[in-house]
Length: 613
Ligand code: ADP
Ligand code: MG
View 1 (spheres, rainbow, N blue to C red):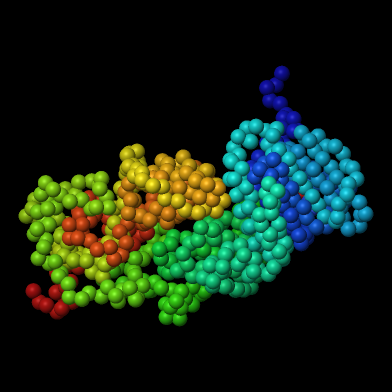
View 2: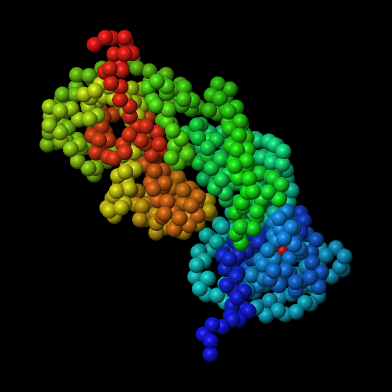
């Protein structure tokens, strides 16, 4: 007898279902998309136990007749496309004809529906893969689909479900995105018998406002550009908008929420020159283009798309955003743009133009203009006569390490006291931002924050590679309020976070407690640091991806842990910084690809002053 056999139908359906229905939120997405495709104007979502116990979507769309019900539940049966050419220009959210069939394979499913033409509704129930047959029922025009006990029959999948709170948070996120894309539709969300959200039908601006918050809306620039078949509308945050803890990177292509590398790259690139103190721009954008120049059938969950002309789309999005961002000049927008334009404060002749940052993100520690003026030096001691004293302190037996890195490597590699170390000795701190040092060749200028950031990054990386990351426990846990989504991220990535030195625990339904941080980062603001790291994890989706892209996360952490502008450093600290820079590879580039120091030789200085030597 052959060892190769055909699988039975139920098993085939259960395997296929895995691709579409991964968790309650993915089932919810499919059901609400069906309701939207049926032109509903009111959609009610009811969940119990995060959608695992019960997940119900009721709509007032055009419904299905009794004859259509069995078809709706048949795999690869759809009313939305008929041919390949339809697929090429699909305008509905669904088209694969597999969502309902998949759900029926992994849950107890009840479908009740009524069309305008019918005085009665019809219902069908599928339990353990077996249909009850169609029977009459009572209902207004529209459709109700109810799932009970998701994955009850497939314990292997059920094991992968997270806590009720996590599954609920994913559901809410999915619904928020759909609500953003369909403002003209009213949505209601209930969980465990309580009404949690109600978004009445509204215009887009109002919907964006109520979903993303007044703060985002006020800080946002609106955008509405058309170029031939392409159009881009929505809101982008001004560069100075402090990243809220909400999910504020949302992109829709022809009404479909997508994650797309090409588009997010175009967006980041547009922000590149203006984005400070914040690694991720915030936006909600709606791109529309001819459906025929788009392939939406890339992935069963339909969150990926492929463009026929990717370059043209990239260019269009980049140009639209650049144009909008260009209107935010510091003078026209002083109140909202407290950060001085970085280019203006970089004397062009001193710093080589930084190339595009490796991560596409630029960073600045330049202080607001007002602050800058307030730190204008009065006559201060230049401390120029001090190096001798510290020279001894640094290279004697009592070498003083940088206080921010108590367990750092030995300072410098003890050159003979007569030879100046490559980066020389510190002279002074300029405007709280730059360190001036003298070495054999002349003058060294160091961007303190950038240099320290690079050092922390390399240290984090090597300690983690050697599994020697030291953790600093906080005496009293620092807590912060977190939305359900953040609680979910915490649960999802707990293990990875603790590997990275973050011991975080939920301390209430909407509170996260920070119990430890990587010791190297003890200078950072714990809450901002943790939020930024959670944001990164959110961006990567799964722990596996985050693990693979660990270094990007480390760069974020280093940025938070590094000395900020206007922290006054003693000469000891400045010298320690120089020694650490020498000890660390690639110290001339900060994590974002900016240079960290610059040498001005005596010859250059002589030329500058027309001084013949
Ligand atoms: P798809 O959406 O890809 O067509 P589904 O399995 O999600 O596949 O649905 C199958 C069919 O059932 C749809 O094509 C549609 O005709 C019908 N249908 C599903 N949900 C609804 C609904 N809420 N209202 C009206 N018709 C629906
Ligand atoms: Mg569908």
